[in-house]
Amino acid sequence: MDRPIRLFSGGNQQKAIIARWLASKSQILLFDEPTRGIDVGAKAEIYHLIEALAADGHSIVVVSSELPEVIRLSDRVLVMRDGQIAAEIARANLTESAIVAHAIPGANTGRTPAPAA
Image (cartoon, rainbow, N blue to C red; front, side):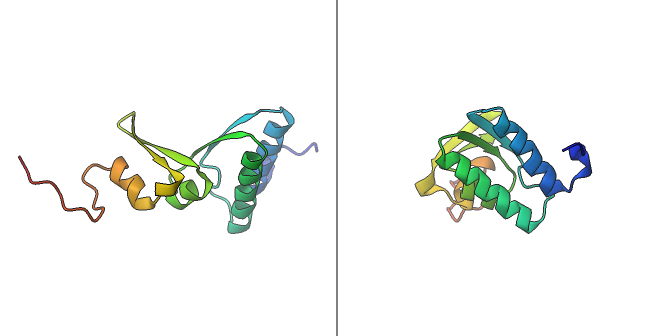
């Protein structure tokens, strides 16, 4: 209990911070790169915890550069490009290629490019 969080491993630091948030009774939780720098086992635990919190009625916002993580944890995704919301993608349409198509103009998504004007 007296050990500073900075002395724990990356995964245990993440879990300790989440425990601190839960103790505050917050209903909206923001996870920014929640599994960056942690091992596979700790990553699975964090995923299960986020999923359980959402199932319990917490509002969860996840910011991640890992597309499989975004897809696993999201009911919907807002894709940002140039500081603006470029698209909102519902879970039923959520794929890596759909995200990339909105995030990177002209990305190769399997579509034929429009002719140049």
